[in-house]
Image (cartoon, rainbow, N blue to C red):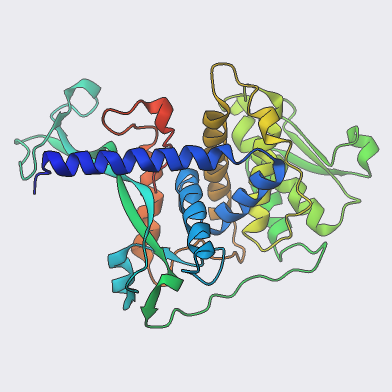
Length: 357
């Protein structure tokens, strides 16, 4: 059904409110501890984009403070109809958390390799003979998800969660990270102490293709360092075509943030992770506001961590989708591919919507 002018105006108003709420959430990330807490939350809901994670976080906390939900952090998130497929229903009076969802349209072309040849199909229109068809992102729309605590019905099975002692590394994680480093063509070795690495815990040399990690660290610290160096390899290896960060401080923030997410996804204690003061490194990029830098860095970190986690054959905490809802998982991974598109009549630099799931 075509949208009426009134419905378009209502949707644009809801989008404007969402983006104002998102900007306010990003502006609160001014300290390393607040950034760390945001990343911990993102690690538990890593199928959601960084922007949507922030929107969910602030709305759920507000619901908790109003006494609408029992815990300050959600457990499982899904849409209204998705909960119905799991034989659960949203409890009357519970409001969903507004997020940004992709809005797509079908496009057709007889010359798919020619970017300018694609034409948008009307609703119900069939392609002409010989035309290829594919959906493309044309904007964003408001969508809503509910936490499991806002629903009732068929019980949700408890998922096992890894439990670790202080200094203990998750089973198999050290070897799995080391294997990824070697598979990328880097030689991995150890140094006896920090003095051999000029005070660092680890070092990656992109020219010599080597990674060195201190051997005198406890198991958890070694795993954290391996994850940090692997993040550098995947995000900052200019020899392999990656983009060098505009400021060294941001590169270190990205690597440590990816390591934190990988640790959190395995139930590791993240209190020892050190993230430099956010309002410091976020102001170092010329031509970008701190809000834009934080949003871009957060989504870049989330994607890198999710990519690494998908390659690890280790036991990990839930990613935030209810058990049995495979469709939600696949949808959440498809949306980020349509990144950096602004909704109609809203400039991209205001939106910052990279990854919309």
